[in-house]
Length: 192
Image (cartoon, rainbow, N blue to C red):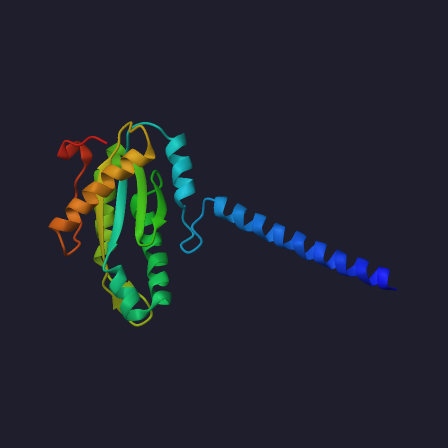
């Protein structure tokens, strides 16, 4: 009887260990998927894969939400999450079918669009950010600021993102209200 009890206990421990290993593997696989869990759009991994599979003349648009922290601080994180989901929907529509949108993290998004469509995509992003967002308690005004780093033939996604981020920082320092400022690496003489 004691042997049978010990074998049952050992089997239970082994089964629990196997379940733990499987859960860890599932979480690792989920992390490798290309979808942002909150917004349902692509995540960093999918952006990296898209960049690698679509070389050529493309524009990288780094999109930063101006005023998002105030929404979280005033209305809470649940409302902030709802806002991020609504923004993702509007931005997906704004960049159009030939573009690719990913959530970079926090309140930043990245769009890849064909170079020749970059200006039109920026205009649509501007229009998407002009109206308020209905977060349950009436429309909340959040400005969407978009700055671009154009990267025709950039050697890496990292190089394009560094340039876009530098332009975003320059714009933040010069434009505190968060209005969209169109700027590109090509136009500013800093090809990226």
